[in-house]
Image (cartoon, rainbow, N blue to C red; front, top):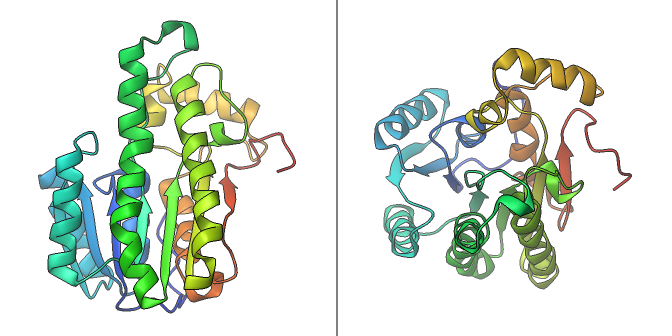
Length: 261
C-alpha cells in the first residue's frame, strides 16, 4: 500500500528530523513527509538502511534527505545527532520522536537494570531530542513535535510494563510542554500506536498467523495495519492544517483501545 500523494500540508522546505527512521513506523513517516517536500534528516543505528531510506525520500520529492546514525541509549550520540542536523540544515522545524520499544514482560520479570534501560531508551532519549529541537522552533515561531508512543499510554498492557510506565510519562511531559509553547507557534502531540506491522510487533508473537488471529479478535477493524496506513495521520499533525491541534494523544489503532479518551 502506497502513500496518499494528493495532500498539500504546507510544509515544503521545512526541516524534519525523524528518529528510528530505518524501518517500520519511522521509515513510513519519513517517506510521507518526504512526499510533502521537506528537508529530511533520518536517523537510526543502521547506516546502510538509512541511506536507502534517504534515497527513496529524494525520489518521493524531499528537497533534500540525509542519513544520520544515532544510538538513542547514548547521551553523547544524541547530542552529536542534534549538532550534525543543525550544522546541515540550520535548525529543526519538525521532530518525529520515535524510539524502539523497551524490553517486554510483566512487572515481576523486570530488574532495576531493566527499568534504567527503559528510562534511557524510551523517556530520557525522547526528552533530549525535544530539548535539542525546541529552541529553534520557539525562536522561529513555528514548530511541530510528534512522539510515536503506544496504545499502552491509554490502556496498559500486562506484558509491557516498561512501555506502560515510560511512554505514559513521556505523554504527560509533552502534554505539559504543549501548554508552555502553544503561544510560540509550536504544537506538541503524541500518537498511541496500535497493531501496526513492524519488527517490534512481530517479536511479540510466535508468527504472523498468530498475530493476525489476535487482531481479528481484539481489533474492531479486524486486522493488523501497515505502516503506510499509520503515517498520514502523523504527517497531518506536522502540517499547517493541524495548527490548532496540540496537547493531544491520538490513537491510530483500528478501534483497539476500549476507553472513551
